[in-house]
Structure formats: C-alpha cells, structure tokens
Length: 371
Image (cartoon, rainbow, N blue to C red; front, top):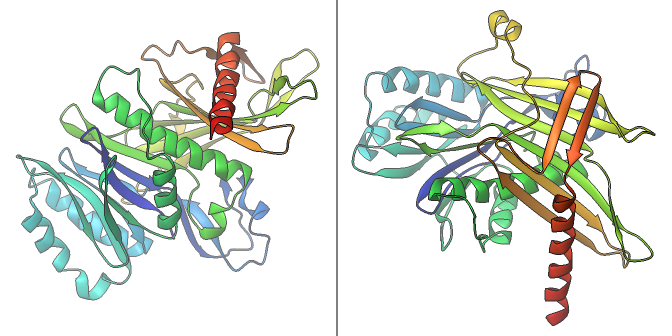
C-alpha cells in the first residue's frame, strides 16, 4: 500500500518513495495529511481499512547504501533495523553482499515486504530490488526503472507522461535530474490536492526524493510546493488566484518536517493563513522524541526549489495542467513569501512569473492547433 521507485536521469540515481501507511481504522483518531487535511474527506468514519499515518519509506543505511520499502511496516522495521547495524560495520555493499543479507529473510518475510534501492560498491552505483510483485523495465530517459506498491502503475504512467524531459537551465546534471524528478512529484502532489484519487489506492501523503550528492546518498529537501487555480474569462483573458496551499519540505537530521498552510484572500489583497500545521514524519527505524519536537525550526516557505502545480480551466471546458519548477540557490525567486506576522502571510508575485505561465498556455494551445 505505497509506491516506491528507482530510476536515473542524466546518469544520476533517483530513489522515490511516498509517505502513506494504512491499516485498520481507529474510530477515535483521524489522520491529517499535508495536501487535504483530514483523511475523512476521502475515507468517512467507518471505512474500515484506511490510511493511518505518515512514515518515511526511504532509509539511508550509510553514505553508500540507501533503500525504499513497501509492504508490512513491522517487517520493514525489523529488516531495516538489522541492515542499519550491519551497514555501520561495512561501508561498501556489492550485489552478493545484499543477496546474502536478504536471503536470511526470504522465508519469514518474503511475501510481506519489498525493497528497492541503490548501493555504491566502491566501483559503481547499481540499483537492486528484493521481494515479489515488482515492475522492472528499461526506459530511454529513465534508464532501468524499478517500481513497487499499490501506486506503481500510476507512477509508471506519470513517468511515461513526462518521458520527454524538459531542457534545463540548471548548471549540472544532478540539478537537472532533481528538477525533472520534481516535475513528477509536483504533478502527483497537485493531483492529490485536486482529485484525491491516489489516496483511495492507499499511496501518497507526500513524496521523498534521494540521489547521490557530493559522493554520498542524500535526501533532497528545501522544497516548496504550490497549488494554483486559474480560469479563463469571457474576454479570453486569464485570472490566476493566489495559491490555494503551500507545502514546505525540510529535514532536521533524519526527521522530515512538512510545513503547510492554506490561504484565504482578504479584501485588501493580503492572505491569511488557515489550517497551518507542521507534520513530523519519522524514518522507519525511530520515533519522534520530545527534544526534537521542542527544537523544531519552523522554516520559511521560501525554498531553493519552488514547485508550482497550476490547473487552468479554459472557457471551452478543457483543462490545462502546468508544472513549473524553479531553482535558486539563494532563494531569489519571482515569488517571495513574507511572513513577518505569524497570522498574516503575504506573497509577492512578480508579474513576469504570471506572464510566463500564460505564455506557456498560449504555446501549448498553438501546438495543439497544429496537430
């Protein structure tokens, strides 16, 4: 009941995993997730089997070994806990090392758990997969792709949808690989907010990305997702509303913190925060503790990566979806969040950003007319 995947872009390894875990319903408790808030919007009380929490699906064993899991949370916790201990003793794991380790768990846990990951054995970085019901295929743009979980088919469809990778203005292959992966996670995050369909298939709730950064496996953070709505007016002009929601991802050591806020526009044009929250998502091998909770830094929504999911309702009834990924090492984007007052969040949106969105719409419409 999840989705995990490994693939590569520009020869850079990418590991992707969602956050949702599911189980028998506890009628006394209700899960809140970053995109929609209370899960009861999708699973009314009495649904029986429901999403019950958020947990990191990607685990870093050491600088040279990382994996994602799908299946039984209990099985994952036991196996990853043991692998974490062994990975502190041995830095580089080759394929035989991994096969030998996982062979010990095949009989007892083989049907309950799946793993997809990457290892640097000192000579090369290779992907691996253990468990049943995994999809594996070769892609021109994504190399060897491995997929697993209830969302595997949908993720494969998303990869195919974005098969023609966009040209990047970033300065190196890694930044380009991350930016193109963020196109995919932005699309999935936006669709979750708008339709919630993936939640009914028990995957989503958020997405983690890992790659090989400065000679070690590292999770990518300092990301803000925005979901926008735009409508075409009778005079064929466009109206773009301020973002419905902002979701910020950042890590405190190995704890994932997700800050989110919904917005309401006031008469004077300012935005007030509504349903602001911070979700604390732990790795499979540990729990949150009071020291960590007391020292959470509520980071600004301004981020290195600014990812917009824009759904545009055209006057003819058609719908256009745009994904915009902007990278800025110093966070100097055309969109700035100003949160000097904790109750009022202002968004400064440069007019060039709005213009670029609708220029993209016009370009898309022209291409469709030519076809």
